[in-house]
Amino acid sequence: MTAWSTAAPAISAAFLASLVEVVEAFTIVLAVATLRGWRPAALGTAGGLGVLAGIVLLLGPLLDRVPISSLQLAIGILLLLFGMGWLRKASLRAAGVIPLHDEEAIFAAEAADLSEEARRRARNLGWAAGITALKAVLLEGLEVVFIVIAVGAGRGLLVPAGLGALAACAVVLAAGAIVHRPLSRVPENILKFGVGVMLSAFGVFWTGEGLGIAWPGADFALLLFAALFLGAGLLASAFARKLAVEFA
Amino acid sequence: MTMLKELAAELVGMFVAEKRLAIAVLAIVAMTGLLVDLAGLNPLFGGAVLLFGCLMLLIESVCRAARGGVS
Image (cartoon, rainbow over all chains, first blue to last red; front, side, top):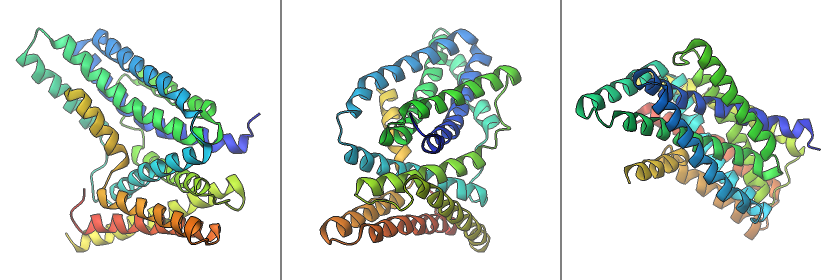
């Protein structure tokens, strides 16, 4: 039986990170559905989910064959790279150095792309729209799969992490079905900031364990790491705001 | 083929948001491994190097981007 204190960080990290990715995929699928109908959008989404399922079924069993310390080290390093990249971008967005992620703008850009495609080759339009949806689901889905593996595999928490990701899909689909437009009110940068903090904290934790470091307080060390990354991200953002003004 | 290329680019982009930050993180991990495994340093000291090294790298990377040349 998995302790709640062990599973909770994995579930919440997988849920929040997946929420961001699913919102991005949903925006593009919605653009396809709005312009070309639900059929290519649904077929593309199903195709993307099918390829993802194939990847998981193919690679999933291999995880059991990797020694746990090597798995923790490899996943920890990937999490550090992934999480710190998110945190860096979120800090720069919070400081106003780079623009915020705008789902309305992405929706408009995808719609414009599909309209352009329509003018060029009307015959294959359904195909092109389906491929657009498939690519969005596949690319964002790959990130979700990585996040689930990364936060779950090191401690046998794949199921709780997977449930967190599934819950994110359900929340986005339910919200999307209700509002029927891009989910532009999701505070995406705050989510990305929070997820960057959690993934970076997991990254240091797993990398350390993979290198043979026994962290004091075991899993509770994650809370300290998260607090430190949050502080560093906020500090970096404040410095960046000042520097951006000075160097403007 | 274009889609496979996009897929590969997306996968690389997931982990290498900024080249210098990615290389520096890998260097910190390698240094921690060397300190703990080869130099026989107390693992907790190695952990502190890893943790605080990553925190400093984050702040440095954000400030560098803010000074100009965001990538």
